[in-house]
Length: 231
Image (cartoon, rainbow, N blue to C red; front, side, top):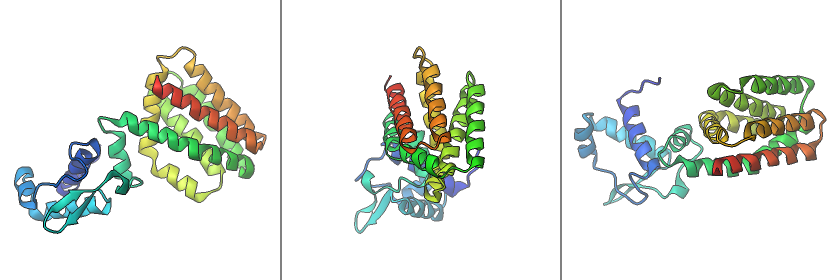
């Protein structure tokens, strides 16, 4: 369990309130003096927290008005804390659907690049990750982790550092995303078998260096995930 200093604690508390919608875009945060007194911290701690939130573009200082919550479109969504707060928020279902939409845009490309650029070592790693995924069925948390590792191996096989870095950065939300889909999948007959079969077909397509089929199989997998999330 993470241990935060006073500044980090306040950053996370305010950040979560903003992401959850407890403090809405356009709202003014309490004054530094008020937050200092309410949270039992120094004004320096509050100023540092405001600065950290501003760096993530969640808030901005407006003359004569104070510290205002920024529009959602301005938030630094790729910040790891912002992603984690959104993933853990009380209304994270909508955020999970947005992750799925992102998957439609990016994962088929990663699969196509993997089929194009994978080395023999990449193929062996992907195959091993798939077998680990098979073995993990029935263990929710192991399944989430091994599924993440399988997809990570595809991104790594793409040999595109930008894609790999983005996937690594989203580790926490990717695990939360998988846990949510697993919860929904348990309630759907044959969903687990179909989900695993789609992964196997994807692996075979990449191992055969079939770029188009790999892209299609990953797209079908994203469609299945969208269906599972909506159930």
